[in-house]
Image 1 (cartoon, protein in one colour):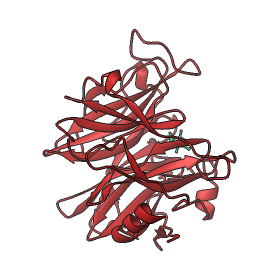
Image 2: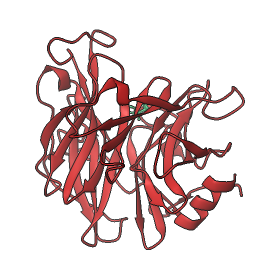
Image 3: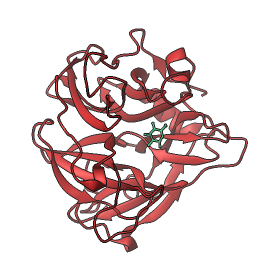
Length: 308
Ligand code: BMA
C-alpha cells in the first residue's frame, strides 16, 4: 500500500521567535516525548550567534506548544562550541536519555578532528525532568558520526543505539552508555540504487517503535538531488541489526513552501515519532527552519513496513 504521512492543518507547529536572541532564526529537528499526558518537545534552536541550543516546549494536544524563555541545554567546551544539534529523547527505567550531536571547533582532547578542522561527536545526556540535562559521554570520537538514537529498552541486557557512519546506518551496543566497544558495532543498512529516494545517504530518525512484528524505524535519506525524505523499515525485535523489510517508497517528502525554502532547502528531517492512542505523531524540521507535524495510524505504518 503506497502511503504517506498526513500534514496537520495547523502547520508549522513551531516557528522561530525574532524577539529572542537564541531562537531568532531557526527552530527545527525536535525530539518529542509523551509523558504523563503531555507532549514534551526538545528542539534545536539557532539565534543571533548561529550556535545551536536546545529549547523546551510542552503541549497537551501535540499541536499548540508553550515554550520556555531560555534554552534548557546549551553547549559546553570546545567540542560543542558550534552547537548541540538534533536531539532524540527516550525514557528507559524512569530516566530520560537524550542523544545529540555536538558540533565543535575541536574534538574531545586527544582525538583527531573530523572535517573542516572541526568535530562532530555523537553524545548522550540524561535527565529526570526533561529540563536539567547531565552529559554522559560520547558514542564515538574523532570521526563523522551522528544520527544516533537509543532503543527505548535494553535488548538482551544491553543498551542499543543506531548511529550513522556515512553513508549508512549502524548499530551499537553498550552495558552502561559510557563504553561503546567497536566489536559491538555493525552496519545494518545502506543507501540503495540510484533510482531510489535514499541512494546517497541514510540516517536514523526518531526512537524506534516496538511492535509485535518488529521495531518500526522511520529514517531519513537523500539522493543525488539532495532532497531529504522520510521512509520506514522494520528491524527484528530480538536482533535489530537484522532488517526484516524496507519498503522501496518514501513516506514523506518536502512539498510545502516552508519545507522547500528556509535555511536549507528541500528538507524534512525527523527525530520524533511518538505514539498516542494508535496515532503516530511525526515531528520534523522543515528546511532547517521551522517544526512541522505529520501523522499516520500506527497500524497503517506497520502494514506499510511489513508488506511494501
Ligand atoms: C544533516 C543533519 C541535520 C540537517 C540536515 C539538512 O547533516 O544533521 O542537522 O537537518 O543535515 O540540512
